[in-house]
Image 1 (cartoon, rainbow, N blue to C red):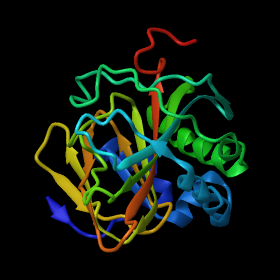
Image 2 (cartoon, rainbow, N blue to C red):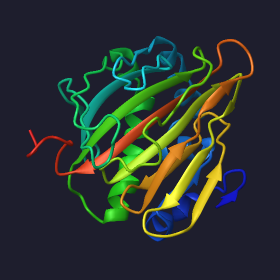
Image 3 (cartoon, rainbow, N blue to C red):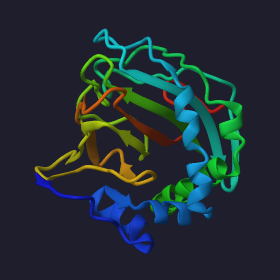
Length: 248
């Protein structure tokens, strides 16, 4: 496994990188360009991470994770928020929290209504469609996370290295405050190679082909009081949400 700063993918080669390597990394300015909005418009979403609710489902007994969760259907350029629903994963993909209906607080309506939010999901979804060369609808789940160090250590991925059981995963860094750790690690699902790096700039994005690679983020520790790491995790899945036999 090699360690380094992120090696960014040229914006014209993101789809090819996903097909070839199973992942691509984009810097903030390219993420904003992909969404077709100024970086300042994405930054206007950041204050909503201060209003996340405690995750009461952690089986390790921790109180280090806050989150909100909402679902959308993306059909071409049309993005529609669904009725609020529970997040579900099979044990095959999440041995720690799989098999549970976890009903989190929804994203705030003011966040979802911002044009930058809509533009971000549309832009990334278009890349996913280009990779699969498909115009079928995508079933999108959005997770706002804050991992804090109130208990001395915070675990971004308490389930360890994993796949999510979807088609594509986007992990976007929103911010890091007074912490060490939080290294991103990617492994080939069927091979020996891996990469590791630390995302430090808000709106840096890791985009993954979930069938090709597994991923994790290492625990964080405080450098001062109120240390935390904020991320946005978005998933795209064809055919329906996990736990749903057929589209609504």
